[in-house]
Length: 114
Length: 111
Image 1 (spheres, one colour):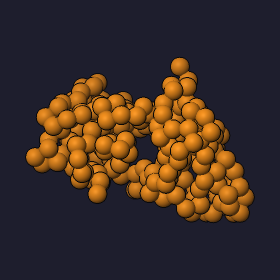
Image 2 (cartoon, chains in turn blue, orange; image 1 turned 120 degrees about the vertical axis):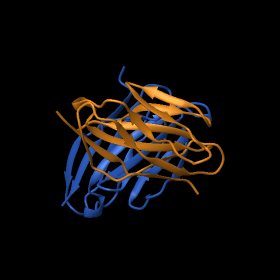
Image 3 (cartoon, each protein chain N blue to C red; image 1 turned 180 degrees about the horizontal axis):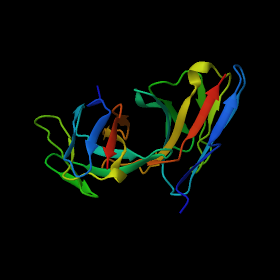
Image 4 (cartoon, each protein chain N blue to C red; image 1 turned 60 degrees about the vertical axis):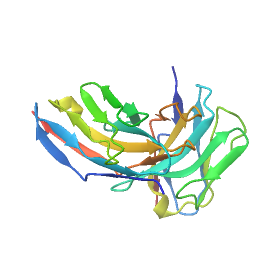
């Protein structure tokens, strides 16, 4: 049972570089999302998607792009990395619906921008 | 709007002590409530949940009751173990499937 898989687990970038954090889930979940986790601030929603072809902004979307071409994949792109994007990033997925539960999380990707 | 407030940590307890981590929420509609746990170096895992008022979620000796009148979902455990040391997040899910997380409470349990 793979669940939610994120790659890479660690990445160091220089300011201005671009990169993509990959996220894949094998649970056929409609809903996928990206969070960043910073000390003392908990988890903040960056972008989310309720299905293939549909994405929307969360609480802190600036500097990040997403797309959802398939149900399984939800990559997060940093077009021009900045030190303020140093963080731990989590991808999460769930089924849609009011009575369904939980978010399933990946193991996280630790990004450092120098 | 929607938000979750939980007590700041860290919380340091001796093994077998009683644990309470407070969580209150603000929400429109009828949210579901969750507690997630994050062990060092790992992602978040669901600990327990409650989907309607007066529901009690429980798992691994932890409990939390959905209190609509006080908009609270406090986490409790009668006797903590060293292995419970982790960061605990309270969260709500609104009717649009959006999740809102508290800032997390770090628990340290000493032998």
